[in-house]
Length: 496
Image 1 (cartoon, rainbow, N blue to C red):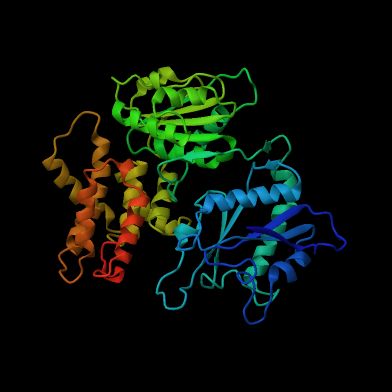
Image 2: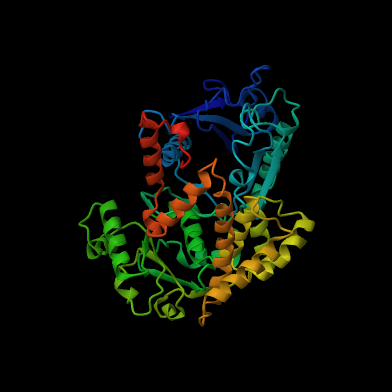
């Protein structure tokens, strides 16, 4: 793991005082030099051209063992990220990082590579899907998109213009009063799953969370307790995960507990206790947080049961933040810094979510017009809209025919299930899910390909699992077992 300065060349006089660090980090199976160097012209644009076009830049590459999947190493992505941050701190001889008003520009491939028929990284995976993100397509494949034959390459010129534009506006976009020094401090980051790559909107809620839930340096401050409540599928858990992911380095530890039942909560607290290397009990883990001198974040998710006293899950002290997600509005009584009800999305946000999750251009006005009746039909409920987008992305149905298909399925569902008070929203989610399952059932009729049948079998099996128990490790272990089985070669598997 090496941070190497390309410009100014070490040992030589420095022509400009650096005002920005540009760090090139390669991907899996990459290389700190060859990833960026054109194979025919040998143009190493980071060293040969970038210093000429971005004045005041210090240019560096970060090299690491990129074979994290199959290589002989226990380091994961976060280990490499921490190493990079540590190396940069040493190079700068400071621990102050301004992280406010971050500008993001993203380039994505548009051509398949070699024998592959599809893209290595699909557009929806390459983008952050943020409202302020500057996205640019590159007319190249995954390997060549970051190699430029000459200084006149069109993609290179776009990159340079945007970097210079960022630097030109940095004093305006990042005033001293708006930014605060950040000291990297995160040790524990215990979230059960990632934020959806299609996360959209909720800016007002996120602003309130930043205002009330980020740790203060005031030693007399009390624990901040914030409640997010609303219908199931309205995005409460995703909002909490988004806050935790965005502000990871502001907390020593981030912990997630499923409080849908007392048993689940006890299991969650025991697991977090093991993580912190204290005795495996809820009280010992709470005591660990109480005695911590560093700020922590505790997310209590699915606190829906009105008979469950969630107050007994709260540590005491003045160094922590607690976020509770619940369908029960009575949970507001526990809030010390306010509560917020999450309802249906705004039409524009729901349309953007549908198009992004459907891998369609969210800026296309014609597509937005087609999407409007769909999100209206789904009540602009985040989870239902996301399900619908997945069906469109997987070509189960299209924007044009989705409402007709949905209406047919919903009528069938309502005819077979009694409507209960307060549960109407469920039918939007159930129906979008049923559309996907029925499509898989149709594919399963093909007796020459068992992939769909296997998928249905897995869905049936996982229906008996709690979602916390369906882990990525389970699939990796299964894949490893298949690949090591001599009588059943891995390429013959339809399951994985």
